[in-house]
Image: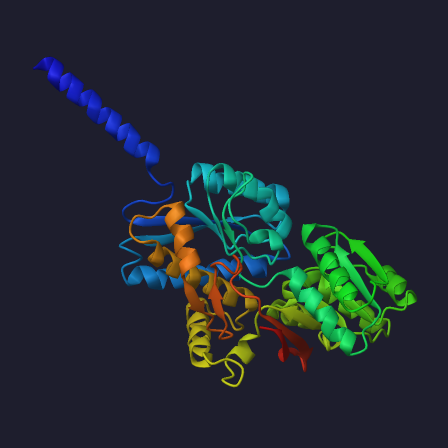
Length: 400
């Protein structure tokens, strides 16, 4: 009898070890643990803080209604300060120490590219990062995880914008860009757009993140005859470039991507006393401003967008709802729908199946977002907006 109980105990121990070995990281009977590496400090802090903050508010609402299949969604956020080494450090903490199930809203192209191999090693999918790089939408393989993009790509945004402005007379394009993965993708998009329209990029100028002196680069591009300048920079650099161009009397269109389409451009421009100089700045982005999202002529879900704005202002006390907050809310909404579709037996495979099965309508644009056979980016839509009378205003939808 003693031998029987010893054998039974050993068998139960083996079963327990096996169950632990196959348990899904970041998932318990009561919780789904997500993580994000994003700037909560530094010049890109408005993007990181507001995107993850809006997502947490959405998840809190979901949890108050019982969660997803009885599980609450928890989002852990670590400050990357937008620095690649710091992103790698805090991502390891989230993945290895905290044991997250998936990464959500991680910010920055080079930052994500540096972290993706770590996620691949631990089979942690990359959900809806705060970058529009092409590398953010891919199927797992070669040591990298499943990844789903949130918006149209930088490449497509700039390529499409080059065609639009070529028709408007912008036949001598140039590019000012950051010497990073992100900036180089903008250069690639500009060159592709130029080639598709029988043009060539006349000149380029590379910079490092955080640079503020662009007079030399603008002088170089003006000397090359550029009559439209495309920006492969983030919003702090865009402010400096447009202000410098205005001071130099340069009147050619200056066009950025989703990376500069942010209310922080208006707020920081006003604080620096250069808001007037930012008039006319363009962004070929993946959504429209909060003011435009509340316009039923532009957005069929304008009433829902207005409710979101009112709720966020009430909860956070923020006077202005930014694009980062719109993206955070959208990402949380998509993630919740995917987790619901994944079913109660939540694994990475069932999450991927769930993501590929859903179609969600963006409450800020009316666009339908899906991640199925057409690719792992949610939408291909591109909107052109411009700073007019001190605020971002919709100009034209360049692509559905």
